[in-house]
Length: 163
Image (tube, rainbow, N blue to C red; front, top):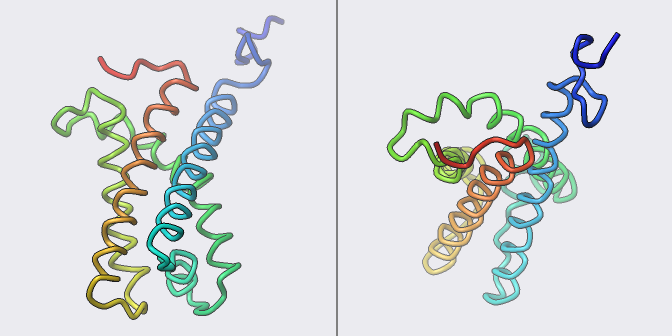
């Protein structure tokens, strides 16, 4: 029985859905790494801790557990959000400029950023310039994450970036 008949991808020997999920996770790894890099540079340049692990830990109901917050952040960025993006990507084509996968990734990331601000940042004590820095750097990191996730997802799964 040929691999094609059995429902396997010719290149890898994996079922197409498994192959696409693995490629999607690969895009999530790179995009999460980019986001972490931006957060690290932002914290180094401003000498201000953005507190992303603290915000995530607060969201999952374990305030002060920074390692848990970091682990949840990485797991969501590498696994949860990329797989969700892959699942809804076709639905995002209806947005203006939705034929571009980078734009779809940015829109997806803006939704994540808004949810992050509303749900995860509520317990943080941010005031004045620190609040502005927090907004700017978390927005920039989310935009970079979304754009790279969209572009890499399309590239790794052999989909066109624009149609």
